[in-house]
Image (cartoon, rainbow, N blue to C red; front, side, top):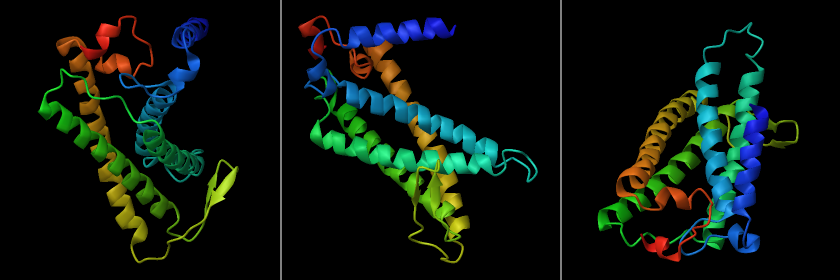
Length: 213
């Protein structure tokens, strides 16, 4: 099974870098480059993993072996996600995303922009609220013992409880919104039969005319 997975991953990247690897790192006018693709899918995977970890760890008992370790892992990944989000936003400025397909209606174009803005804003709010929970006691966050993030704001009344409520509700909101975002991409692929989903796969298109479909 592991050999099968590695074989397919290797085949994917061989196909991905078959033509011009330098150009493929950046976004073009019609498709996403390798950097954007890796940032997108790695963040998506991390967000769902963090959501599952968060739900699991709040049910742990004090004497459970993971009672102390799970929150530390959650905090560390959260800080890395925050840094990754900053990199992703900077990359959108350095290498703008592809133009909307000509087949998109005005409603689809507006919905896409609003959905992305909401997701980025909510993600930032979730990560900040998580930081406020973790540093409410005035202690810094140790990120896998690589470095520490200082507690800049702490001791503000019910900081941990308020930030915790916000963190929970925002997490559910992001999961629901991202699922709708994914369903929209699937709808584009199987019903509209356009290249919306293909563009985020990172694979190059064999037919230039396919760009405008």
